[in-house]
Image (cartoon, rainbow, N blue to C red; front, side):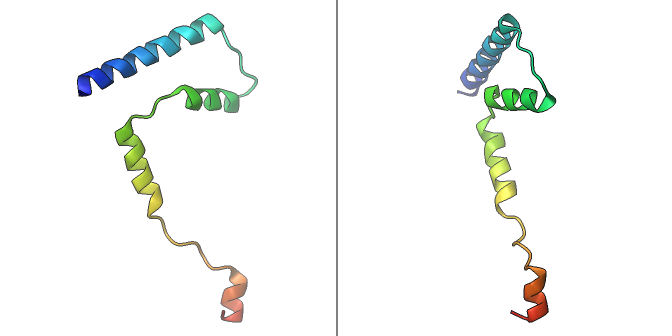
Length: 72
């Protein structure tokens, strides 16, 4: 099963690479390049799960300074 998933991801990557070469796109800024890349990059499920776990259990938000001053 892993081999099939890996093979299909490699095929998708190769197809995307060929499309990029044929299109010859130009970008006005680095931000546009990053957005384009993020939209066309497939994140492996294991990485997505680990990222979700690492960002979900963060520290609680800090209290505003005025609540600390007023004691509320």
